[in-house]
Image (cartoon, rainbow, N blue to C red; front, side, top):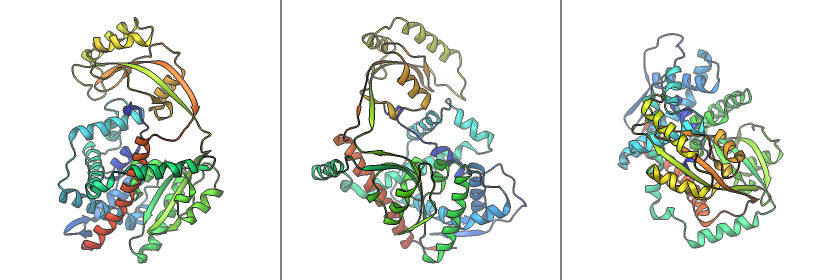
Length: 425
């Protein structure tokens, strides 16, 4: 059921961050060199477009004064992205078209958009769809680079997992905080004032209603930007003491002022809190039937071949009155996906509309058809079990450790690349 996991809006924001913008310029300008990174030029047009796209996607006023105010930090962001692209090429990392298509599909599902809906939405904003593909390719490529650099050291051993379990058990009964972050890097102490001013501007827009995941995806320089800055539930001892002190006093929903930490400024939003060991989790046993189309849906339009498959599945599903019926039904449609996807954590299901269906549909009743780009599904809930959330299993603990190591390596590698590179501004 990985296709049902939580997906943020980061991809749409990232597309805007790398694309031309429909906001008109105040006056035509002759492109000049804003920076050179190992011989690769970043032009003033690149910086101007990127700044205007921040205004488009996060609610900043699209005035020339506002755009000019953003340019110093935008230039630093483009330098970092150029370094990432150069390292991706150096490591000979390639990103497959299927990986890109899967990322686009997850963005559409997570934002409750139909297949092809993301392309249409971007077209309305005057953003070429090719820029989204390029941004996703960069993000996925950078993750591959980090995994290559870490190599065998990425994988935790039995001792690592045991130590993590011991630490998690010690947290039972303590308070954890669901946080989102935006990290603004300060690579040079001389740029501290510029970075703080930029962070303050971002905070003003966040407090005025700009979506935190959108802004984080574009301008946070932490690997959590790929999840819209979402850190999940964490303990305060994992943070710099200055951040921990502020979070412990924040009300839910608040956005912090910029907090100076080693390497830059941290902005955090407190989304909720809970006591470890007291959270309830609903686990579902389900069965699903997937019917593939002869050809995928294009441009968000369901054609006659797709409609025929949907109608056939609806009619066949009327004969299913128990979970045991779903296995045969799935085989009748080719069993291209397993009828039993394994235990499903209801909290991880996306989009919210589908989560609501699984939460409320009576047991042993077939759902309404769930239409996707490549096929249509129906599901049946066989059982629901709600119990206190226990410790994660070994696989989940392994993933926690890997993500932590990847995040640390990302910052270290980017710092090293900057120190080894010839950058002029």
